Length: 280
Image (cartoon, rainbow, N blue to C red; front, side, top):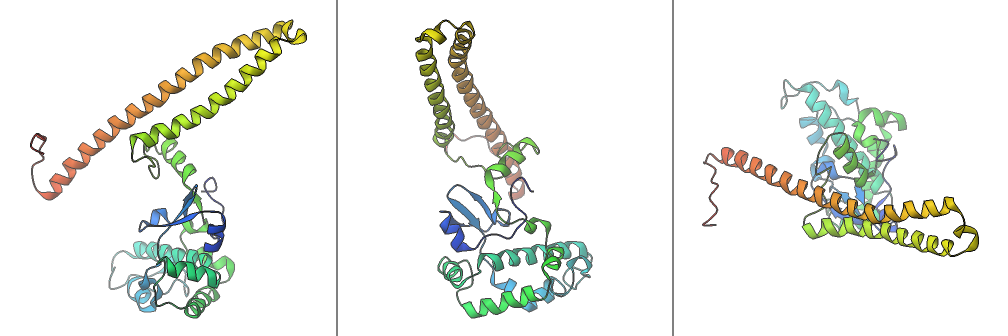
């Protein structure tokens, strides 16, 4: 986890705006506090997590009163105490992140205006709630009561994608960022153009160097210039070929996964999958 984020609470909403990150609302808890250039994904705080009776009924003793790891079975989840404890630790961790995101009245206004918190939750009500939540634990105890995911605040999407692709062999990564083919080519060829720009600068400098008496007579510099010239011709072609190869692989992989999902979906629907799209 340390590769994708620091073990510290997230910065307040005002700080996110200072860093020019647009707040993007998501209902996927896996994207909560994941950020990329220009945006931060946040899951709104549901009203039921602010109701003590919900914790007592569905999540056993309040995680602010006892460690969730000793949460007993309840009438709602009789034979699954471990699952309930895990849910309670995740809920407590999620609520903990919001105590950090809304640290000032200006943060509360941003959250209210963007629909991130219940509309009838006042600033003073929020202060009382967070004070009660945090006062029940010393700073170290809170981390024992929350899920390990929430020991880390903001997570970098780019690094998450790399980990998922290299370690877990997930082609699409943690969150696939390309919805159009043009986006894929634009992103990759923009990077390639930046590299080519540097190559042009180096070649120009070498050409100037070869025109001087000192470097023009240097066999070592001539060999280096020759090698880099050959490299500058071959490398872009290899890079373009790799981009095209990755694109073809992604297209084939998407076709395979789409067909796999279609078969599974039709099976769930209880109908026979049709491969005839001539009348579509």
